[in-house]
Structures are given as C-alpha cells and as structure tokens.
Length: 131
Image (tube, rainbow, N blue to C red; front, side):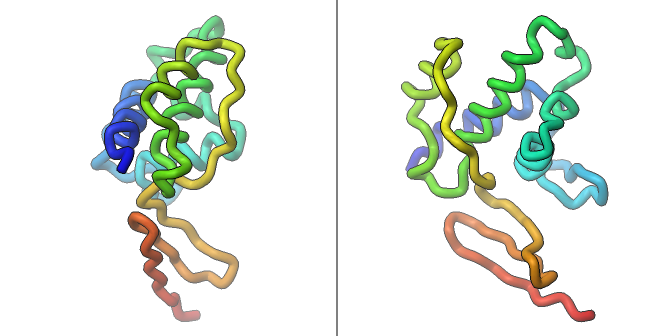
C-alpha cells in the first residue's frame, strides 16, 4: 500500500543528497539514508543533507521543501504518506502547508531505556543491551 510514493520519497532523498541508500551514514555510521535525513531535518540542519552541487542560496527553501516532501513519502505508517497526487500538488504549489513528519519506515532508533528498537512495516523488534 502506497509503496510507489515510498519509492518516490527514497528516490527524491537520493537525488537531493547525492547519496546512496545502501550505505550507512551519521556520526557512528549506523543510520540509513532515511534516518540520517530525518535526524538532520529534526535538528534544523536539513541543508547539511543536500548535495554540495545543489547548494544555492536562491533555492535552499525549495530544497528543504523537497526534503520534507521526501520524508513524508517514507513515513512508517502508509496511512501517513501522501498520495502521488498530493505529492505533485505539494511540489507545484509554493504556499501549501506540509503535514507534520514522523519517523521514516524501516527506522532504527534508541529509546529512553537504552534498548535499540527497529521498526519494519509496523513490526517492532527490540534488542536489550546489557550494561
């Protein structure tokens, strides 16, 4: 369900970052491209995600908008993802407000208890880490 829009989001992330999905990123190189993009967006560092060849002050607002739309397309819950028609409308319309973002699908994150939690299509896998 809504796998086409998810694939489009992944492709858009690859285009604006110039990075591949199959490589790990981040401080400890433990994040997928989707998690890396989401983390930078959450920390208001979205421009750090962009390919340097796209770094143009005239288009930085449009690049951040593309990042937000791409992250909407890869939401964990397919019901939270926009349709391709909505994606087209968001890309075309400059004044349209974009919905709030949640973590991307296939995300890996740490919770407050030090457990590593991975989610894959709604299934949560927890790994307890010893002290």
